[in-house]
Each structure stands twice: as C-alpha cells, then as structure tokens.
Image (cartoon, rainbow, N blue to C red; front, side, top):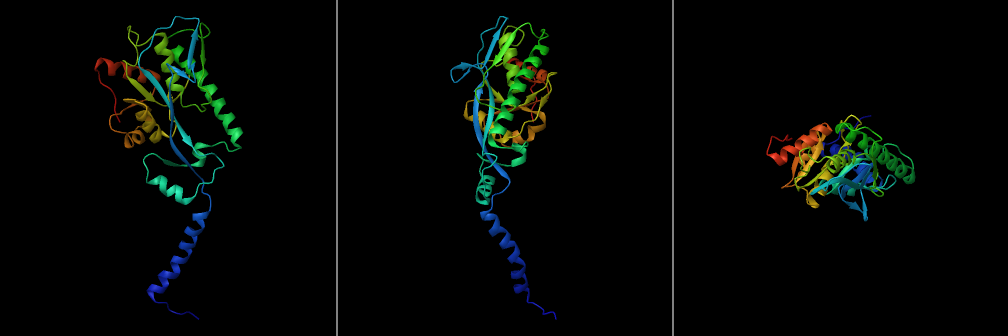
Length: 262
C-alpha cells in the first residue's frame, strides 16, 4: 500500500541520505593531498652551504641574478585529510587541494615514495646536463657537472638546472647573463632534446616564487592558464615549450624584445 507524502516531508526524507553522506565524510579520510608553496632554490647559488651546480673540465663565467627552481609542500601519502580541510583549502589562495594520485602516483610507503622521488631527481639532473650540452653543441663527456639540491625530489627542476648550466658556461651567448640581474623563477621537466614538460602544483609555485622575490616565472606552456589564474601582482608569467624558448625569452626580456604571455 502506498501513502502519499506531503512535499515538505518528501523533501526531508530525500535529504536524509545526503545528510548521512556528509556526516560520514566529515569523519572519513578523503583521497586528497593538501599542498602549499614550498622552498625555492637558486640553481646559480647554494643550498645548505653547498653549490647547486659544480662544473669541472670547462671554464665557467661569473653569474648575476638568480634562477630559482620552485617546489610545493604536500601532506604525506598516508596522511588523513578530512572534508573540513578540503573545504578550507578550496577557499584559500595559499593552499591547493589535489587528488592524492596526482601527487603520489606510485603508491607505496613514504620511504618508497621518497626514494622514487630522489631517483626521479637524479634522472632529471642527468637529462638536464644532456639537454644543456646539446643546446650549447658541446660533446658529452668533455666536462663534468655535479648537481646538489639536498633532499629535494622529483623531476620538476630539470628546466632550471639546464638553464643554470647554460648560464654558467655561455650566458646569453653575447657576453651577458641569462637573468639580466633579475630573479627568475619557474618549473618544468626537461627531455634530452630540450622539450619542456608539465609538472603540477603550478598555482602554489607561482606564489612561492613571488614570496622569494621573483619578477618572472617560466612555466610549461600546457600549464600557462593555471599559472596566470593564480599569478600574484608583480610576477610576469612566461610560457615555454622548449629549452630554446626559455633562453630566447630571457634574452628578449633583457633586450626589450617580444616575450610570450599566457
């Protein structure tokens, strides 16, 4: 037998499952990671008192300005993130809510993930050297480049390591430096043939760059929109697709030429 319900009572009954769902979510951990701006490091300078780039077997040039690679700080792969923290993160400019799988795609324990990230960084360092030497048309093996970024992991410093090597060896190719005395920040993976790849966490990285004095931010072209949407006042966002693009844009900044924008 069916009983006809009044509209208010029917709505109230329909709302019960929704309320129950939210009630459960309020106490259950969610598959998200919370991120905030992390440290930045000048690849032309030092980290923890040690030079980031040490080049032997070739004459290096003095540099000026800074080339700052950027990072994010994220909650751990096993951290419990509740709905309150997720909602709070949605409404804050200095926080980002990211799917956990996008930050920690490999799964595993924290130690395994840390080891994986450090392996990624080591591979990225080697590829950055290859990309820089290919750009400069120098033979691999003719010189040695040692990279020390401490315990920073992941591949997203590749572009800036390559730029740092180029600046130390050749500058802008005309006697000047790549930075023009500016503080340049950015992010991006690099391939051996100079292709720049997307990295994630760009919305937080632009804020870390601005916090640490950068006036220009180089971003993979695929993430240009995200960087521009969160761009702080006073920070210029420049999209790049290749290492050659990045060098050309830095030269244009100094010479007053045309610089790409988002």
